[in-house]
Length: 337
Length: 269
Ligand SMILES: Nc1ncnc2c1ncn2[C@@H]1O[C@H](COP(=O)(O)OP(=O)(O)OP(=O)(O)O)[C@@H](O)[C@H]1O
Ligand SMILES: [Mg+2]
Image 1 (tube, each protein chain N blue to C red):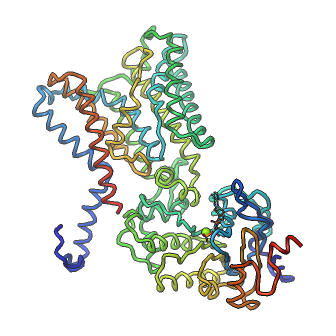
Image 2 (image 1 turned 120 degrees about the horizontal axis):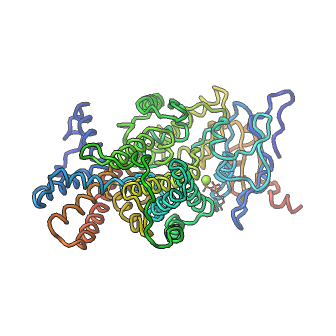
Image 3 (image 1 turned 135 degrees about the vertical axis):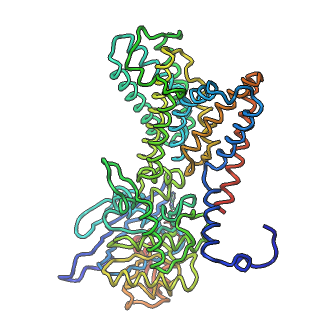
């Protein structure tokens, strides 16, 4: 808007309708997802035009399949980042979740029991991360970097470093590994988690506490928000979702190997930030993160279809990340100042 | 040192008993005691760094006292957390306002008090957001505070407006003790008059008030009694009819009234 030297009130005759329209536009712009929606559309159109067969059912199915497991991890990482913390151990915990279940199933445990115990172990890991951060006041990057190494070592220990296959077929695991037409079941699980955690974070008291704990720890505490408890719970959610993703992936591949989930934590952080979350907490969206994940998968798939060497994927993603972080920062400044 | 409760009168709403609090080497509070009666407005005065904010943060569970404790309506308590203090009936406007700039106005208003607009389904508290927005808008306009939209982030508000939000939230919800830590620091004359009006109204409704301010004439206008902190200790507790503004200024600056021995000398004696 050009500066005409006329006071703002006179430029806009302040009718309620105009104000409402302006507010509506402002709100749309202020949504954390706004950037990633535009980016996803642009990238989709780009590959639709330039990548051969991008618009085929097979390729779309493959993108959904690629998205699901990273996406489930990203849901938890989003919650945690909104609460103001990081988790670098999710990749290792994903591997550990899968590893534990495979080993226990091969040892003859009933499937539901193996899954429940693995999830309980993951909850314990997340709780421990949370307690180390809130009680001992160690930064979550350090705590979970330690976790990344430790739980990766644990995966190596239980698998002996070799791929392990499931000894038999388990019908129960078809709960996670099925197709609904062209849509992979794992993607439906991903959608389920998106819906569940979006409701939790936007519409419950706990969700309000998550945003408050990340947006202003001190103020939230002064107003009676149990900040430490909230953060511990978010850590537990992140670890459990990571283990869930591992179990779901294991059901699809019928196996586990010692490197399962390696470097996933960084892709998750990337998707969450691209999806509009602030590293400092208090802002972020699960739907945004999900779109970030889908965007990453589209880029992976699209570049392959175009016959571009895989290393360009990393280069491209790196650029996208920095651009996204910059845009988020600007949006944040524009709406908050 | 504590003003004794009048015989047969009601018990104090709150007794502060011998509270001490240190941060590392800094002794922020030493043996602070005083009472607050129902329906009484206490002006808590003192120089910068005297320990006023530390005292109220200890009182409402942000800090744990090193020694001493509190008696709330006849029962000994230590407030374990701000949540506990809030549930007991203490409403606070913190000096730092305790608002979260990145969150919307209505979410800030219900911060920590979400239960007021929650519906429980299967043990999970769902916030009724539309109702929360309505109540927030009503609460603000009822107090004569005008914001364009309760969904905009607090970050877009001016310093004075933020202070108004913090205040509106404290006075709107049910409370027996209202604590205001420099509630008028960023406010215009008109807004300040409003705040002092709320203090009068709170007293009329039987609530007790502790108000911290560096503006002696404001303190004088609304308080029934003054507690003056000096270097972390209580320099004196005086009723309004016992002193004049000059005495208060002396107490704040030197820890004693003209011609009296100060706390430190008394302690030494
Ligand atoms: N969290 C803390 N950690 C360390 N020292 C603190 C902390 N809070 C307060 N202090 C110290 O305690 C003393 C009292 O501070 P306090 O904030 O209570 O003063 P105040 O009377 O509220 O002053 P002002 O009028 O400037 O607000 C100061 O010396 C301060 O540096
Ligand atoms: Mg202070």
